[in-house]
Amino acid sequence: MKAKDFEQQFDDDVDITAAIDVSKAKRILQEQKRVNVDFPTWMIESLDREAGKLGVTRQSIIKVWLAERLEKIAQD
Image 1 (cartoon, helix red, strand yellow):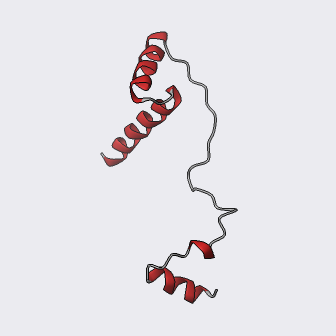
Image 2 (cartoon, one colour):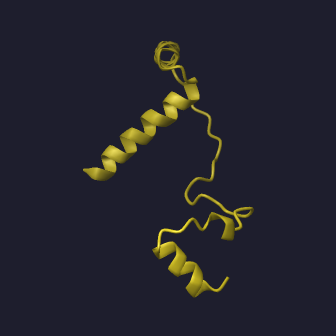
């Protein structure tokens, strides 16, 4: 398919997913890097309680809360 035809289908709100090769697709700014952080015991226990209430892992709640805080800072 030519780029012009592809763009026209996209503009016409046609489903173009069959024309896209996603085998090498990457989500930008989503590369992960492992870090180690030491938390006091009381903080771990609090994180675990909150994570349990939400039905998520400790790591997930930390990521979500950090992301929310960083987004808030970016908006200020």
